Length: 112
Length: 111
Picture (tube, rainbow over the protein chains, first blue to last red):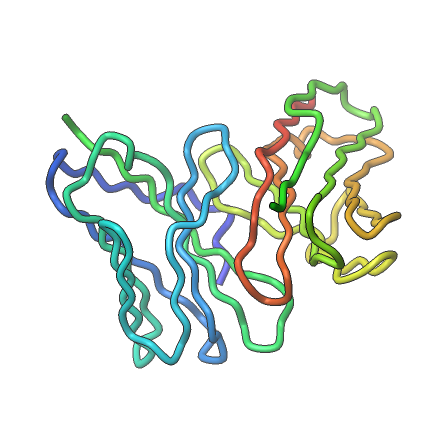
């Protein structure tokens, strides 16, 4: 569910390493999930999505894993680059609803 | 291709003054439209969404209102701003329950 009042958790990784960002969602009726990347002062940008009938989906350098049993979503970024530094949000769509519910967000910092 | 425009990009307003943020979408018909607010260093809070002209759903009680006078126009308003209204406001659109496409945001500072 939404945790909009909390400060963002942070994750720091060395450039070139892999990073994993985790997200717990609240509603077992959620059927669609999206990861967004938000750079400072900009609107969120789509990274990758996954539907509830899948447990893994891969893109370019990114992989999303979905574990419906424990209602957990993760975003893996391979071979991180300085441009990956941003805030990452997961979002869930509750089946039948016309809106996405965003998770808390994680601030990822890539260290040179 | 579809585009979303949001303005103004930045706004500094005194407490008690009115507010109007405007958002328009091009290249699509009958989109779902959304207003989100983001406080500094925090997550995204859904304020309003609309599935059609004149149809507004409010997610949280607050000092703000929204209107959709045309299919691809979404306006966020306030009659009297509070300090707590400061934040980064994001307009977004979607078709059905799919991916959300966000505008570049409007940063509001209430003094």
